[in-house]
Amino acid sequence: MELFGGLRERLGSYLRILRAPLLFEGDGCLSLPFSCIEAFSPFYLLLDRRGTVLRYGESFRLVHGACPRGAGLATLVQERDGAESRPLNVSELHSLIGRTLRLEPTAKQGFEFAAQLIPLHTRERQQGKGRGREIWMLDLRPILETLDDLEASGLTLQDLSLVDPMRVSMVTILMESSLRQELLLGMNNF
Image 1 (tube, rainbow, N blue to C red):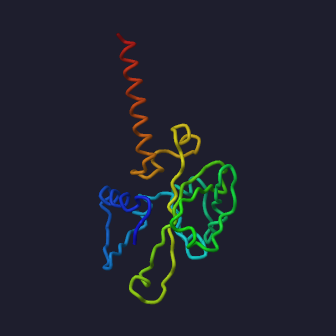
Image 2: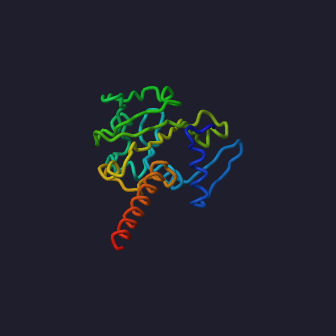
């Protein structure tokens, strides 16, 4: 299965970092514990074919609050189109695959995610035992550009994926800012 938007590279990086138990299961299939999914996509939502949320990442809970068991995707996020938000049509999840989505959590107006829907396969489907359960992972990435945006969101760098480009950029900005302050302090001491 081809993964979109560098997810395969992020996954590889995380597995090296975490030394996670990775199980290759013939036919190019891969099994991961939820702790690995949480590590490379902390805002993820795991969905069934009707858009019912089966599981969600801890960082998503920080943004949205607790999700009731069996909540529908459309009750948790809405699609952003420019300045307007509209309900997300989950009646046909297949139509969302391969699209970059801009989503806003219903519990936190003004906060946005870039998202992609990734089809997953259950063990039954992999082994050719019928259709299996259709499951999707919605990989969500917060759209934050500055440290002020991060602070205003109520999140911290620890809530982001270790290899998320935004986190890497913000760590670099923090390091540069700290170095500048040290240099200015040093110059003032002369």
